[in-house]
Image (cartoon, rainbow, N blue to C red; front, side):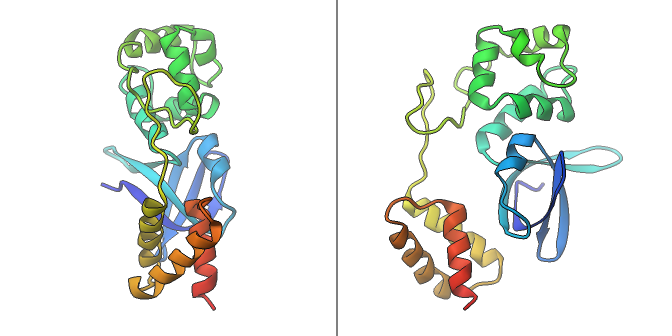
Length: 206
C-alpha cells in the first residue's frame, strides 16, 4: 500500500494532481485545500496518501497534512460518505472547523459540501460526535483547540525529512547533509520543509 509520495509535481487539475516519482506518474485525487498548498509544477512535492483498492481500480487520495488524512478515514466510515464526498467536505471545512461542526451538531456547516444533504449531515453528526474527541486538527501553533495537542516540527525533523526527500531524488546522504544543514542555519529557525528542499536542490544542482 502506498502511504506517501514524494516527487516532482507534474500537473494539477481541479480535483487531482499527478506526481512524477522516478519517471512514474501517480494520479492522486485531493481536496481543493491540499491542491492549493502544493507548489507550482514542476517543483518537488510531498503528499500523504490513502490507498483505496477496489475490484476495478486502485485509487490514491492525497493530503497535505496527516490531520486531513485522519479525518478522511473517519468520514468514510459513515454510510453514504464515500471518498468523493469526504474530499468535498474537507475542501470546505478544514479539520478544526470540521471538529467544531460535528461536536456542535452544526449540520448547516456540513451541507456546504457538495453531495451532503440534511439527512447525511445528521448521520455524520450522530455517528462521529463521540469519535471526534482527540482527532488531530492540524491547527497552527498558538491556536486554541480544547483537548488537542499541536505538534510543531523541529529543525531536526525537518532536516531528516529533507534528507529523505533528497535521497529519493538520487543524492547521496554524504553530499546532501551538509547542504541541508547550511540551508537550515541560513534560515535561522524559520525553516520550512519545502523551502529547505528547494534551496538545497538549488545548491546541489550547481
